[in-house]
Length: 88
Image (cartoon, rainbow, N blue to C red; front, top):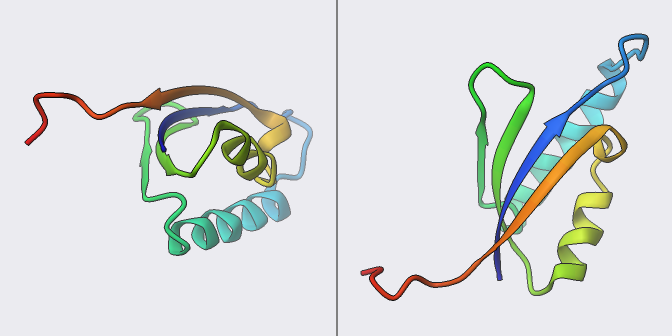
């Protein structure tokens, strides 16, 4: 199943984010290389991204998202995607 996922990051101002961001990047690369996270784009002017995840179930997506080091600091909006009948 494909999912469109928007992640808005909201870090506390007093947090030393450098180690957390390094772990987040490593996990994102791992998921992209495995094929689970085939699409990743920044949202211009915001601390947010738009992603496409390819996983078998809603529960699998939740499990994966919860492994992201930034998960506790994100507002996440998930939209399940279906094949469009006009797609060629």
